[in-house]
Length: 448
Image (tube, rainbow, N blue to C red; front, side, top):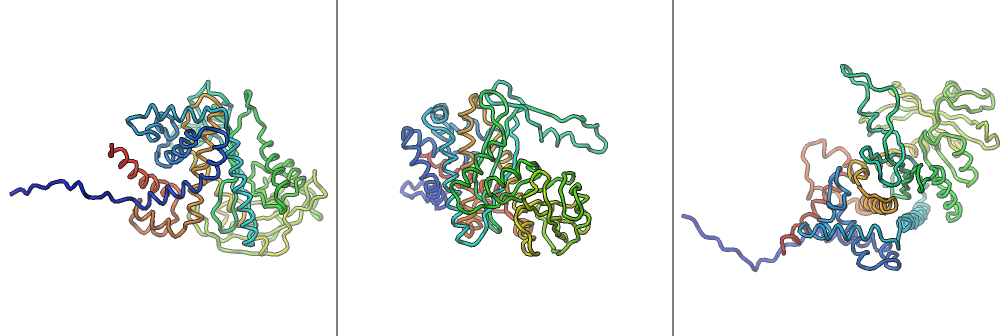
């Protein structure tokens, strides 16, 4: 016999404490930049700015994650998606604000955090690297230039039994991306600067100018220098010249065929000079990217650069005992006096992988290659808001480390020993936030 069940309309709806917490954190994070925008644009556009921030956190799609027509449904509800898209367009094409507001916000946060790291006795690290945003199907979008396709290089990699890849490099339309993260040994990074630039058209920019402006800003506003960590793309004479001119310390991965001068061995290529550099210490290190533990040795030499003979430099030679990887050469302006100082520099360079993770998250998680905006300035505003979202996720990892595991267990539970022992990528954190915000969004949609 069936028993009729009546609906209890007096039952109060249970609120999501996670959603309330996230909304409070978002409001606290965006408050300084919202106060700045209120002085320049209408408060309705500022409200759209905050809603767009939450919508990017909510909507996860690599191919369509930053399409205004898709985000419009989360701005005003799917029943009024065209109205939400128009509100986004009004915000991005408003001429009374630009992406420099976001850059100033990052710079103020960077200054405060450098001061905090100094009080903690930790040396700040500024991690530099370059990447590219590829738009292979675009042609008439403003600001496009020719960039080398890393995706094409990966897809045409030699595979046994398949065709021979093209010998020349593959170039597609796109624009360049320079990122700088602020970190310290054992600390979660934060965004210092995200810059997108092109080499063609009226918005043409020279990539080295980005470093010049930031170094000048650091010298003018910070009394103590930070340690700049750079990859092989910056292994050149002008990097040494500018770092010495602005009195900044640097650690750059040097190329093996570049010339260096030693007091006794003369001028040789780096790999030839490093042959006589004996290891002075060994240590077991965990390579978390390749999931292997290897024994690594380090040695160092005092060297000079031919174009900067008055500047003392030190060459660190890092070797893998099993020769699974070629030796790594690190050139630095920091004096290396003992083994402890040498290992500190080696571990500092290992933090450079964080900027690679930022580029991967931007392309694979936030869909930075998906925007379809005609005008360059509007695109910079949207990409700047995405960099704010990424920095917000990093701030959660930095300030709420005990809350994160409980939050992940509630909203993205995973089983198996691998998920219990391995480090959790930032993608899972964003997925958990998206699930928590989606519950509140669904309730607001159904309430009508």
